[in-house]
Image (tube, rainbow, N blue to C red; front, side):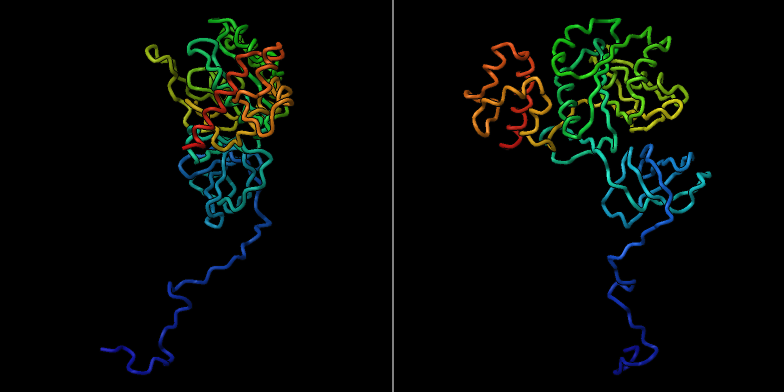
Length: 335
């Protein structure tokens, strides 16, 4: 049976504005000029904790942001209930332009970039001198990512009571990367925290390193009122256990700076880094490329770096590290 007969042009017939029966989309977005300014402190399952006027506010991303996500360190515009009261939820309506973006991929074959932190200006690369053993190649990769993102690197060596730092520092002495060496006794009496805090003053510093190196222990000593759980190194595998599962931004005492504790990493992929820029992370080798042929890959017979290193201008281990990174990237590009 026809509901409206043969004539559909009757007043009581509902005319839908579009097939889906909802309002048409528009490219015009509200400006939210009255939005509060916030800093993303941590992200957990779609909920973002933001600092707004000294209060922590739980928020979620507004639909109008589309696929654009906010990460720890982002400056954001937030609307809604900004009181920070229990069971309230605000909305992030805008992510402000970033001054820096530290990225990594799971490995060199993974095209999916993961933003580690935003707006940091220093990267503290934390590595233990023993238990677990240091991984110089991971340090090199973190340096590449730091230089690519425009962050100043800081090398923090822990557990010097178990092994000497001399051998490792010899490999990085010509890089000019500032470094700090700490041990467990200094962590216990607070002297290590004082020395490290001096290098963080006035900066937003992201801490990275693989599990078990003492990264979170150091952060806890820097910001004792915000202690995070710490783990131990597996005696069989020599690897640390992941206890930090999400990045967290913490203010240093007297608001003298920020530290961002990040989960431990097993690898630091550089898929997002153009291979031609990798050499910039090796300033001790870069002058030697002046004699290289055009478009030199720095891993071919005519590369001038071999003679540069043979003449004693740089450590051969540094050239090996550069070529190991480049070889990894070349295998990825050839797949």
